[in-house]
Image 1: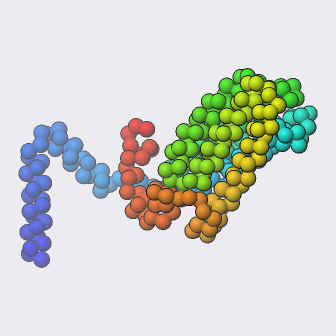
Image 2: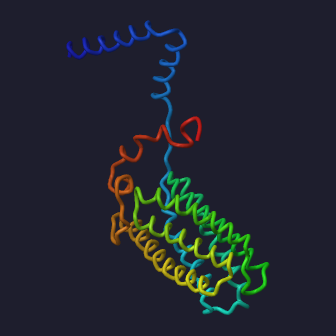
Image 3: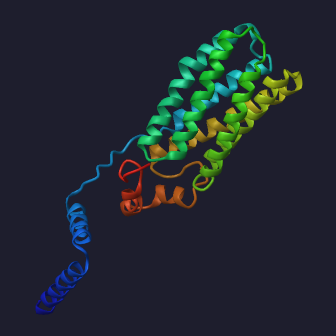
Length: 254
């Protein structure tokens, strides 16, 4: 006990020496920092994962539009598809983006935001254009969305491979749709349609895998978690919160 007291006095003495060596302003900041560390509390609220309904919204959107591309749905029903995009898909993916932000997942938030905005624009274009027509302006937007989704997919691949594959598929879907919108080529309409069907199947798998993982608390169907993606699922509370002081909303700038 005497030794512990001596060590404690030694530590306090070392701090006092350090404080005397600092300038008055630096010493004040050091003291304030120690007080803040003892006083500040950061509250973290658990939420349900938005990935399942975000991916199901993507599946619905891409399969509906693919059905138009492949003439499984007549072009005269484009208005119905447009309303489905605006009333069903966009709210799902916009909500997923918000909860991705609240869940501290910038990749999910960004990906769902880009998807939501793209499908909203696609829906409005379908609603206001003649049935079966192409739009060069929409084609340019789809190129931008394809590049954006490619960047998001690259970031997602650092943590979860299956969601990254879905986002890469969305990038490919938008790129092929852009070529069709810019050229009005029947061949590219078929290509983008089949890419959309494949993307829909992959998105349904990813949604189901994420849903099972959320319900069971462990991986049932592989999502390809690695590095921080694996740590997020298997790590303890310390691993989840160790760097929280440097995250947006806590640090002084984004």
